[in-house]
Image (cartoon, rainbow, N blue to C red; front, side):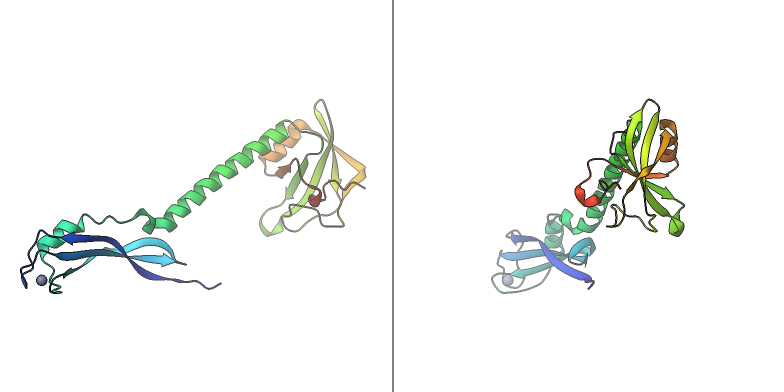
Length: 208
Ligand SMILES: [Zn+2]
């Protein structure tokens, strides 16, 4: 990927000054421009650099003298646009959204394990880090305190959200878990995710 970053400058204000005399030609007609430089990453503004830069010019004679009194008057009038902080703002939004999304996910997972439904598929995680392996369980029936489940055929060395083509739930080898055991597995991270309402593409309807 080509990473592009650097500085760019935008104009943050343009004013006509008729309050101060031009020492050169005595006219009261000056153009004042204020600009701000910002650091960008892939053209997304990250933060402004340095202060407001001013340029002024007498419209009558072109004189570019910059009297302090004029500077003072217009410096405060040019506001730094909030979008010059786009990247950090974006980062905060994405992070907040991720926490929100993750929180919802956790809540949903908890609710699904609390009240299992026929067809629910649990992604089971064993081990951690590079050693982690993943497999699946599918709820067949729930009776009272017990949940009957199919297990799948393969074990995956990395996280997968669906079956490979040759995987399936094993029809003839069912497991029974107490509901409390499932909750315990969830608490300990053994149930990595719970899927309900998955599509055909997931392969989770394949039972042989
Ligand atoms: Zn002038």
